[in-house]
Image (cartoon, rainbow, N blue to C red; front, side, top):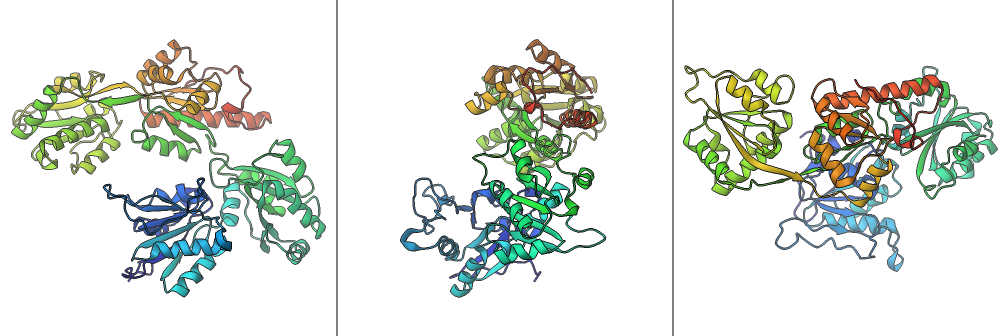
Length: 576
């Protein structure tokens, strides 16, 4: 058995995995952590890590939130699936409860063991690493006393991961002692020892306690001019780092308008020592210097449509926010679609071409209506316009025969589409299920290649419902740093359902036609993709952000996001 393979859960006692979720970046989860989450029956986690780990949990996993229930309801882990749904019931746990004098740590341990009863696999996820969690060891001991088998999956500790993301190495070729201090529990003896040392000190504390921790180090013998860095929200796109000295950190945080603040209880990691010096960090700050770091980018697409685009934006440091601008509805007259699907079964077509995920969904729903499945595609060649459409087909059980080798568009599909050959192609007809507002590019190109095309409306696109009021206010009030327009319809629909983006928001368009529509709506176009591709559009926005950042650094100005600029500031139109 592999060292990382879970033993089978027993009928009386399940199995508990104490899992380190890392300091915040979901990409820092280990492979072993992802494997354990995929097999969990119950997931126990606090709000600070729940979003990080839930993505990798299997569908239908029972989720236990260890934070306090706003309604004050007690936990009920004995409840099974919700009647009639087949899915486990969501259980909210008051993990901070001290009812009847029971400490929170014992309460949490009890909850984990309750979840493990009946042979269920439980993942207990904690921030950072379980070995450094204040309560995880007590929960492990409780499992051991109760005979519940458990394992530990280490995670990246915040005290190590956050400095790495801040560009602050803890050791170098000369070597140095590294001391880790939790300011919330440090004793006088601890402060005295680290104060007498000349090594690097990594301090875990909170924003409003940072000045006090610096004072403890100075009182213990560290010089006031000792450099330090302070990082909040480390490893996330909200990360922010300040460079100062032990003697000036209080004034630095005040000048940055970080303190006083109601968010003063936010945890921070401070690195004290010569290795945190500003000159060195300027060269090593790889994360916060990403071209779109911290930019809130509006993507006018559904989460499903924007999956790969949003991932690309995150790689540039951005925070994508998907807002659907269109909704999909069935065609007004379904007869044409019904005839085409029946034609698939009777051998009317040589090819079927899917130009969107929605087209795959429409055909799949019609198949299910007739009791058909992927076997109905036997003998028919299948084309997909791009990777996302191809993935939707694979999920349906169909492997496409043709996906563009170059640009993922109708033009790219035509580049690779073979001309009709009466010798090798027994049938000359193509079934093209698509939207009611689709362009004629693909139809005209296929006809030119000698094919007959049944151009069928598989679904209608209508304007989506307005987004929440908070999102609408952010759009109109300059809360977004950039918006990506991928078609003229996204411009019209977004303005129609949410209002016109603020003047400070960077407007990026996929091509000249989209840019013209944006300008017709009173928007200034800052970025244009060099070719009609959503990924080239994201690249162009990243290039814009990189140039903008470089200009600020060269001028000696602070690097800010567009939403942080003075409202009404004039900006030049730039295309790439």
